Amino acid sequence: MEKKRTTFAGTWYPDSAQACKQAIQTFLKETLPPDKGRFVAGIVPHAGWVFSGRIACQTIAGLVPPEKSSPVDTIVLFGAHMHRQSEPFIMTSGLIDTPLGDIQVDGQLVDALCDNISIRKRSPGRFVDENTLEVQYPFIKYFFPDARIVVCGVAPSFFAPIIGTTAVDTAHALNKNIRVIGSTDMTHYGPNFGFEPAGSGRDAVQWVKTKNDAAAIDAMESMDDKAILSEGLAHHNMCCPGAAAATAAAAKKMGAVRARVLAYATSFDKNPSDSFVGYTGLLYGMD
Image 1 (spheres, one colour):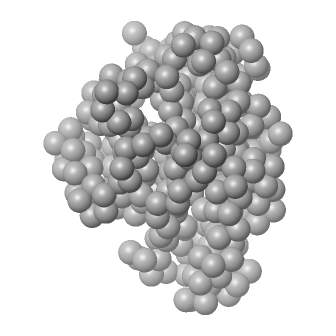
Image 2 (cartoon, rainbow, N blue to C red; image 1 turned 90 degrees about the vertical axis):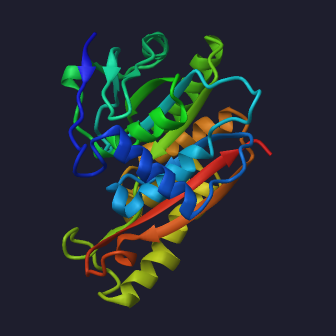
């Protein structure tokens, strides 16, 4: 069975099972995730684990269902750095390599989804190397060891929420219990990114936190997929607004009625610099 090999293990996150487990256990001790409830989808950051691993870990942990609930069959992961005109893509079948063991692609759900909408199929061997996706795999394997996965790159276009809602409808038609994860970082600010509308230094950090990223988080909290796309494209406050919009639309389709922001941080907090990135973790719940 064809396998997608790791690219970022050993640099963006640990490359051994023991080190991954130790890092995850440390993240959970730093701030406990919310009580396991009826959370069905979430937004996670995708920088190296040193910078945003704690937020991503706690968010994905919050998607684990309570004990005695139906197990999760499949994780649907949306991500990828894409332009508005980019073509959405999906991993067809096979396995995904992680330090904690392989994750099997849910080929049945992929095939059914591609029967309903147009998404370019890519085999594991030809699948793009994307930190937006790969840094989440060990968390998914740790918290959902028996679940399969659907991995989809979503462009920031009108098609993004259609992908999200169709994925939910297709999973339900197959009687699959799913959780949906959207991967995006927030504002990429500073000379390294060619984006400096608020100058530099701590004033710039405050502007990013209280203005630019706050507006994007408001859109995500409201589950307004159109506002999410608009914010990301117009204000550069999400690097993967397509993934976020698809996730918000999927959450609404699954019956989510509220959002809970778990955390917000920037890389400036750990490494003060004129160039920095914002991160947030957010869960969508049923009640």
